[in-house]
Length: 417
Image (tube, rainbow, N blue to C red; front, side, top):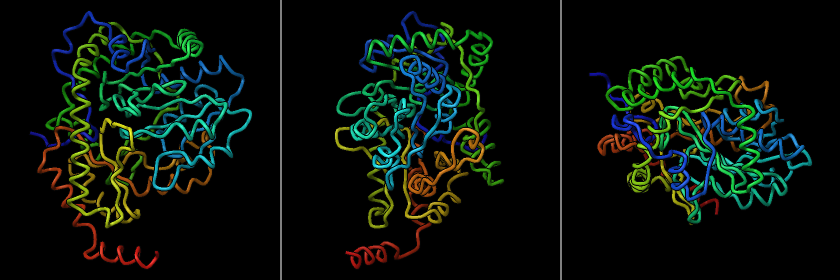
């Protein structure tokens, strides 16, 4: 038996019976799940973003997009592939959400759209972004948030366009895939036209994804994930190539192709389990967040486990822990990153700190986003992470913090008042 390796995210596992085929419409089922009338399927979440950008270019002559300082490099790659100029806005302190004051300063006559990134199944607040970016389209990147809600409404359905991912480890996965939603009929029609124009058939890619999807069904479990994830992870961590360790290196050309019917039928079968999966995941995530808070006394220590804001319900693929400094975070990672317990980093850098993105992303100072990236790690919320394993994670985190640190920090807070 191979070394046990828990997945870094709580993805919905495929079952063998999912491959038996279905007469039900995957697109219709997804639309019903999101409580919308229709949506557009694409070959990946990034492909959906390329199509979204292409659609907005059909509707407007502006050609600049504003991206968050802390987001996936693929967002920038999609913007570049669509021929847009990229501006990057810093985040708020200790947050992945936009610094809206800087967003207002970046807003200009050529800004076509702003991409709001929801992360870890948690919602970013759209209202201040709409106000700060008045006149620009709002794209919700809900790639990590399928099934999460804000104000009773599914994330990804409140902006002008919402983007979702069906990639490995997501709440619902066909190994790769994505879709997008727009409420406005004119935007929806532009999406349909853009997809018809720029997305080819490329049936060979579907056959490749079918093989990879079968591999995902087989390997996405603790007893076999070591072969396709754990060994490679430890190799890159030993070499201190942390960008490769988290999978942040991407090609600058996003493959575009169309789904075949059989892959969609697999998705239709798996979709029947999604609602219960999201509910169970949320309850587990909330419970584990509280367990960490009580076990570590982390609020005294200044460590934060990011959680839901008022009126929101997360989907909780993993938990995000924000430490007081990078050194403290790295002490914990040294113990846990290669331990097979689903602890890792999300995006290694702020968007402007990836050297390989320099041809498409301008270099600029993003102090809050860079600081957030340097102090944050993630803990999987997978059902495969057993209670004793979660307790071990908590013990290791506690053991990495110097004795009496909570007292020292409490005194510092009192004297600073």
